[in-house]
Image 1 (cartoon, rainbow, N blue to C red):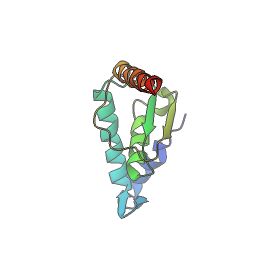
Image 2 (tube, helix red, strand yellow):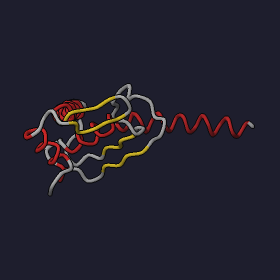
Image 3 (cartoon, helix red, strand yellow):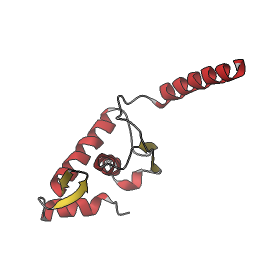
Image 4 (cartoon, rainbow, N blue to C red):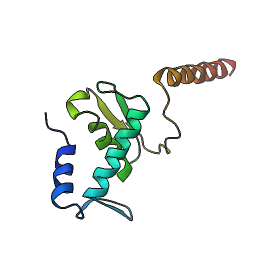
Length: 121
């Protein structure tokens, strides 16, 4: 199965200094885009993400979203990924990569607190 990362890799090999992406005042060459996505894939792998894991990408429309998407594709091949979704206008920078259980626990606590405040209203 072909990956959206494949054309980036081909262009990075053939024309590494051509512009691949523009966003605001920033522009990224194919080499920069490929290298950044490889670093992102390494960071995900170091954080415990494995092929077959589901990854949610939440970011505004910025070049870094493309890097994150391509980095997900780079973890042992795109066919390993079952579900990649993106959304989230106004989402700030990711401060930490937490295990899913910790995120669910935090969200459950936030929900319970919000529900309690609403019931007192």
